[in-house]
Image 1 (cartoon, rainbow, N blue to C red):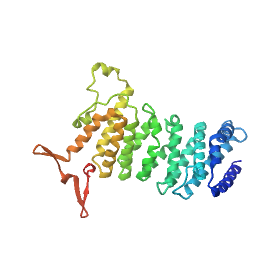
Image 2: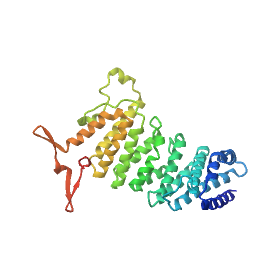
Image 3: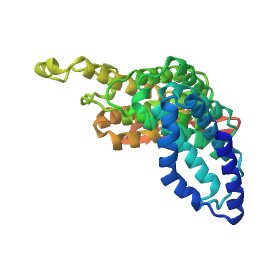
Image 4: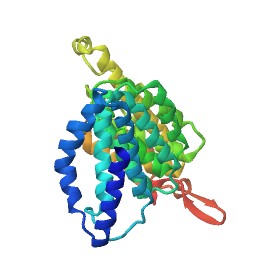
Length: 343
């Protein structure tokens, strides 16, 4: 059946590509898609009727064939969102998301296949971006299912450390739907451990990716309590000392754990400001979106920035003067900036 469906798609696509028409597919994805695919094929697969497992395997294979063909198709500058190839990709994306949501047993297989295709990518263009978008969509529609990340998939998270920076940035961004869930979920702990590992890797791309991950956690985590407004010199001394004794008694273990994670994230970002130019630039560029989303973190972040600025300015005659010698370095007969905010 799946072979016949694929053959039908190929024949119709060849016909309509010549005439630059694909509106039949819009109707298929919006109407016939629900009636035929969800109400019949998925129900047969779910109830294991008439070879339901074979139908399910065929659907998954068919969806990945459509996504692979989208990757291999030539990029057209004026390609319409209603073109055949774009609509086929949309169709495959919808089907895969439904399959993962309704059939927990094949979640790991789909994640494995998506990671395989992402790792095989040679360029961060549409040949890989739609696989990352598919990963994000799977995480979004099934976020509660992945709150506890399967043991069999932990090695896949570790493979993010092998990716180049621009690709790793997009992949860790795909896990936002799970991070946005309230509470210290098991996945967040696994994600946090991945970032700790990345921060101490010698590869620059790993450390930049770790900074991106810390910023995502700060931006999207639901902080249950207000982090104390400590001074920069007291950044390592974040605690609950500024709370009254009565308030101390009302803070439960979950809130303490949340505050502890917030403190560690801020400390990791502070350490990042002692690393290379690119790592520090990633921190600076990501702080504003964090503050826009979580203004409650303004005091500790401003303290961190003031402390950093103080390293490069020196008071002379009641004025703050930039110390250029500490901001610039001569390398290979060229002058390079070592501190991003002076550029």
